[in-house]
Image (tube, rainbow, N blue to C red; front, top):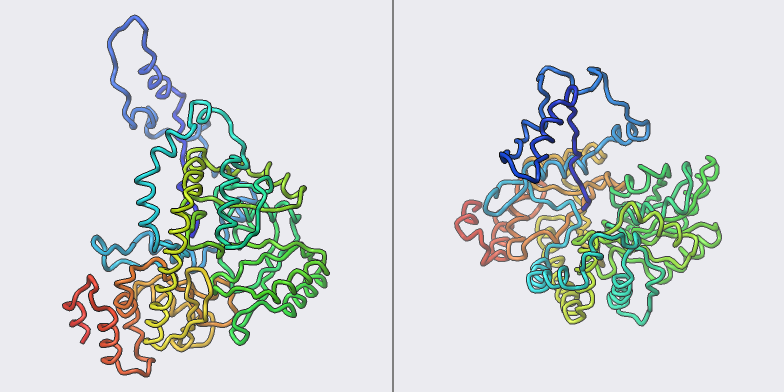
Length: 484
């Protein structure tokens, strides 16, 4: 999922008299005098004449916004962002809002959150306050591209996560406030407005905004199909490259997800073929390694993105561009302590991987009971589920109708394949790492029971299967009996 914030607003007052009066409340003589209470928000913000225009000139015309900003504003949000909004307005909570919308759209790993929370409870204060966080460490400028201590810790973590003897040079690392700015910095550094990147689809919907909005670079989707297990095809890449060349579009590189939200991992042969293709066409490869060590998910919890490159020109540009997305010093200090706690990292990786594996198996088995098959996944937090049998018409329209029913009736926010540029209608991404393991079967059945009619298995058999699997759930037998 992504960083978001609310825009701030500024109110100007007619003639500036209210602002001046507010300032006088704080200008006191050192010799004493009557102490005045701080002004209220209404006193400082409201103009003396309520009917006065908010503009100093009294103009009520619209504020000028650049054509670039207008282009972003006019972008259609689509079902992906509409679904996120529905969850924001009506979020599921087991106690406070049990009939709210369950978030299965965003790739969030909550399965090991308790481990990190326990670590923070024991170490956060010492890490932030006592570890060299002097006044100079707070009030003076730090390197925009990250502290060398954290780069060294990240390099060690990367070696640990891939479980290989591969060593990473901290000097070749640039740290950013999340994956979004890291991807944008690389695209900005490697291409010019009007150029394009090839991206195998299905791919994460956020890439469209990450790549396009501020760089002026386009994405050319390279469709992968279920008959090939949604695996990357070099033939399809070559076809897309040649078609773009005929249209006069310069391809600057390939952005490898790798295969998110499908969750497949490219084998060695495919990777070598991909490298050979890039070398032949003289283009770059940006490898977004979100599945490596993703069970720890440090980058999402603490909003840390990592750029690793041996290209000196790209490295130099990235270091300078990181000034627009630098990571706060307290966050970096905290992560230094976390990543240097090798015992915790090793235990967390092992424990989290086992939780993810178990959760994935249970989730897939639960969907299979409902007659829904999933593409085999090797990493990440999604089940890529084939729900084409539940749509009325084999089209994007039919898929979105099902997505709307899942959201409004089943109270499940799923990721529709069309938002990921999947060319086959009916595929949905379902994030299983946001659920509680003990309640997974009841949640699945409670959400999908409205859509069981197309399933061949008898309804009562399905219910008993779910009751057996969900034994011991917090929902209890009483709720289960209401379905029988």
